[in-house]
Image (cartoon, rainbow, N blue to C red):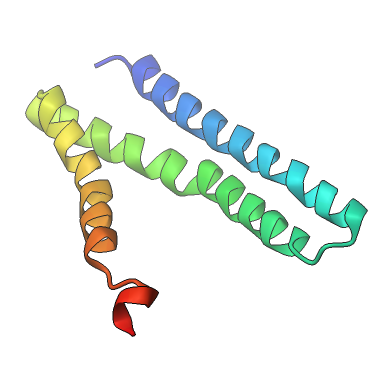
Length: 103
């Protein structure tokens, strides 16, 4: 495998995360301007997403996918391994009791 493929995947994932973090600052500035307390949530979210884009998800999943691709030579298995956490979270959230159901 060529190293530029891995570099491209990591670069795209991190760039998307950083754009998302920057976009979260727009409502934060609007809330600061109008005096709402919600600006703290937006700034914290932007910091977390920006940090994950640099070191967490933006780096971890492409590395896992690359390792699976090198180990097995199968693109499909890599997609399965990297998509499985999202599927599990989705199922757990669908099965979680809602507030109005718990009453």
